[in-house]
Length: 75
Image (tube, rainbow, N blue to C red; front, side, top):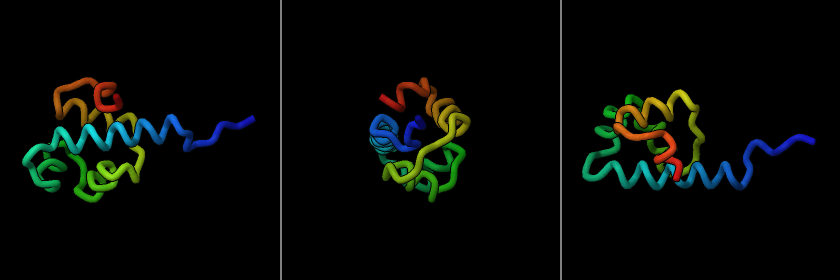
């Protein structure tokens, strides 16, 4: 039996990431924050809206840019 790709738990992780990115952005514009994270502004917008999942590679890059653990971004 195959598990669905978009399970409730995955949606929850995307929501947590979205919330944490919005909180950590502070007063920076999306463009400034995206540049700091090394991703495009449209990607940041989709991540902040919980409309896009991210790869482990991108999550790791974001965490390094924010000097935090990737797990912290998903809690």
